[in-house]
Length: 66
Image (cartoon, rainbow, N blue to C red; front, side):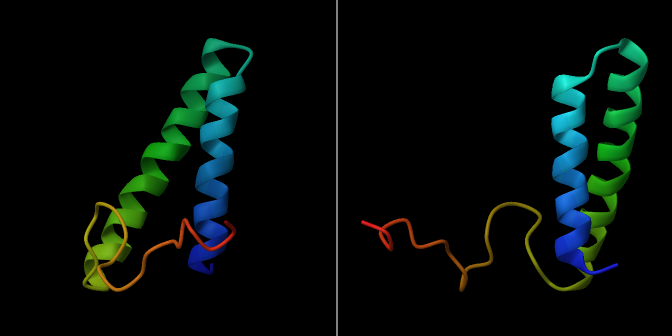
């Protein structure tokens, strides 16, 4: 699975946890998030990236639209 799709799915799980209607739904969403977060961290480490923030040479340009 491409990393962008994987990150998208991780974000969807976070939104599901936030909007869950029951404790069981919330538990399932948090478990999905935890598993994905672990895999994302492993992927970042394997690719020489920090597990925190943006890589040093890639930053969102907050002044681009203004």
